[in-house]
Length: 387
Image 1 (tube, rainbow, N blue to C red):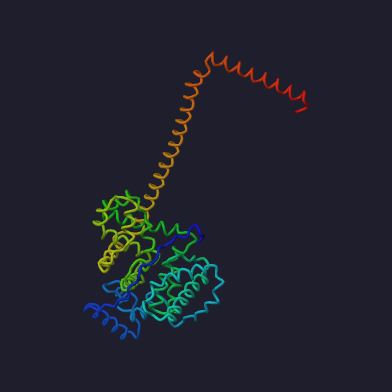
Image 2: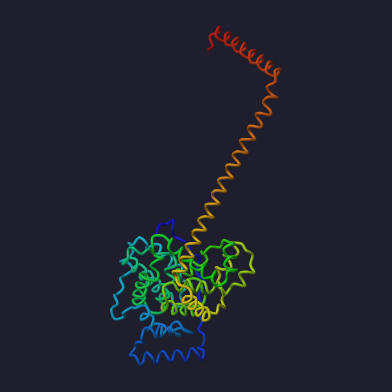
């Protein structure tokens, strides 16, 4: 990705690793999953596993995620490659940028871990990222990729995390890892038809505000891992996304916007204010309900229909830009004509008054006098030998 196409993502939220006691429902689900694993010799049939990951509370605990995330990602944990040393990857052209981003990701590590362990995790994260983009040269690293990688690193460990990121980078995140962000930015526009189908008033308000989709870019690029401040919420969403179709983050984004419709419509219809409001995710989002809503939206609206609506929006935006450009050109032409007319008026109005017959005679006489004086003084200088 060229420097012109790099999209800056702000500093991540402080991640809270606070552990909450399991509810009765979570306890029952965890015990049920453990029983399935026991009966299946450590395996769960894939469709059953996907239903478990998508339904309430997801996979419940990191102990279970450590076993089940690789299965959801299609990773064979018996055929893992050993990680190279960091020094073996330092010549990669993205090395400095990756290190810079990893060093900024301290807020995503558990608090209070020993310094040596934190440094080791940072090195592992750097190696993990560089291994993927080194193995697949057509994939371009983007800011925010490290937010995804660190989540898998913390849950499943370095070698499994690499295998998971390798798989996801060639599927779920492949579109985000192209030379430019054009495809990703177009994909984000898929949220608008969904919002329009569900709440036309909200859609019209957001379009009128000109807010665009930049507020949702970090959500899509990082599976919300960059923007949430609850570790429990992040891994719950990762359960859902690993078990769902590739573009599910788009539908979760639409579900969040629709959920906040009343709050949004109370705001002033101003681009900066709406962007600021939407960019900050509330701490109390009801994610279980939002994930159900997202699944319903995915079943309700086909990607083909949504894409056709997006093409219409792109066409309308292009026509609007053309109108604005034409209006700008017309304004410049009017200003130029007005300026020219003003100049012509001054010449036509004042010049005849200045050049009256009397003033013309005086000016001519004065010019002749100046010429005679100049000739006289030059003759005097030449007679004294001064040129």
